[in-house]
Image 1: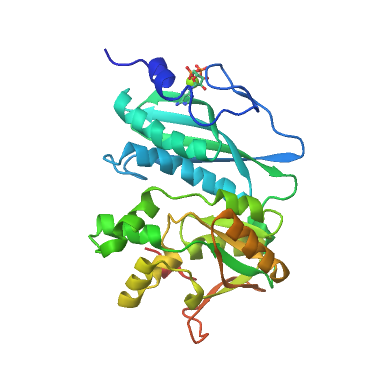
Image 2: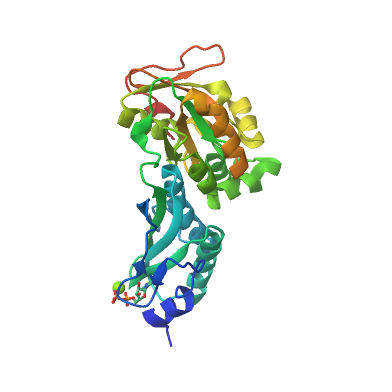
Length: 322
Ligand code: ADP
Ligand code: MG
């Protein structure tokens, strides 16, 4: 006997993530009832992953459960928000208990680590697709917005750039990364959202964005929204050993500049707060690297090791995009 929709929800989603005192009513009624703490704003974000578009049919469901939450937590991190609750709309071709349990395991373990509770959702039949909405809190007026960059601010990124892009090359183009392969593929399949870094830098940075589409594209959103430009230095981009090796061999800077899925944060920080920000980020468990600065004007100029601009045509850096 195939499982009913209700049995599937009951077995996989009725008790997922951390228990929280601010959930009056979770999964099981027509709505969840939730309490936002006084003095906090509610930050809300949603992402959809569609089979064949965002993931392959044979993807490991546990990794997929991790990733769909990670991308949403990364959006909250980029606002400086602390995650609290998620809702999940799941469309499945069949009520496959084994697949759904593995998916729920990946989702649930990341949710528990970030003290997040699944409070509701919807389950329907159709081509596989996953929509996850995440809710978090940020103290009133402290959110890290894209329009906060000012000339003179320094541009920082957390962690290292290009790892997920190189992980994808390992999987789809047979790139041989040697001993770095597992690390790189892990960065693609199990990204760690920079939630703690975002939270401690709220109110310190002037703005932030998460790097989901590549540094140039995402920093491009910041400079556009803020009405400014940016200069970044190639030789300051933080690279892992594997990406450094690939760039040294090929001279191709696409990976750190334009490949997506790293889910690091790109932050703009006034120079007088840079040291404080470095210390706060370190205390949150991740380093930040200064890669350039915000300037008057528009667009992004990439400078090589001699300080010469790399490419300056009107199309910006579209030709870096993979
Ligand atoms: P309704 O008909 O009121 O929309 P549903 O039958 O869709 O209710 O869902 C029953 C309960 O199960 C609701 O509380 C809903 O939030 C929850 N729910 C349904 N699907 C999911 C899911 N994939 N994850 C978490 N909760 C779910
Ligand atoms: Mg429903």
